[in-house]
Length: 224
Image 1 (cartoon, one colour):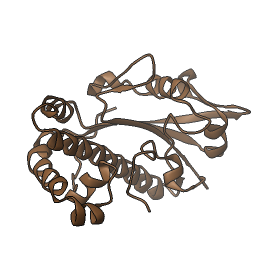
Image 2 (cartoon, helix red, strand yellow):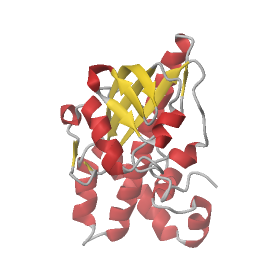
Image 3 (cartoon, rainbow, N blue to C red):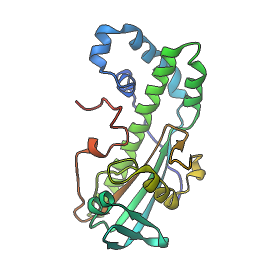
C-alpha cells in the first residue's frame, strides 16, 4: 500500500477565507485586512504543505444487519455505514494529511501575528479538503474503468457513526503511522489537518448530498 503524494494544490485566496468560515465576497468588501492576511498565508504557507494519502481497498465478505464484514476479519458498523454502503463489493479506507509543518507555523504565530496564524489555519482546512476531493475523484475514476460506481465518502463524526466508533475501524484498515498520522484515544487525528473516510465501490452505490457527510460541514463555507 504505497502512499499517494502526487497531488495538485490549487488553493486560492478565496478558499483560505472559506476555510476560516468566512464569505469571500463579504470579507473583500468589509475586511481588507483579513484578505491581506489570506494573501500572505497563500504566499508563505503553500511551501509548508506536504500532502499525502493512504488508500486501501478491502473486499466485502458479507453484509449483515448492523455491520459490514471485510477481509482480514475487519468490519464497519453502525446504521449510517450499513445503509449507505449497502451493496458495496469493496470498501476503500482513506487517510489524508497535509503534515504538521503548516500547523506548527500557525501555532507559533498566534502571539505575534494572529491574523496570519488564523489565515494559515484556514489554508490548512482548505488544503486537506482539496486533497480529499482529489482522492475521491481518483477512486471514482478507477471504479468507472471497472464498470463500477462509488458512494459519497463517509467520515467518522457523522450522524450515526461517531468518532469513537468509526475512527478505530478505519485505523484498523489503514496504518496511519506509515504517513505520520496517529489517533488519540478520543478519536482526534494528529496532525490535526488530517481527514479519514471510507468509500463504497459497487454496481449502484448510494449518492447523497456531500455536505451531509462532510467532516468539515460545521465550519465549511464552500456551500451556500
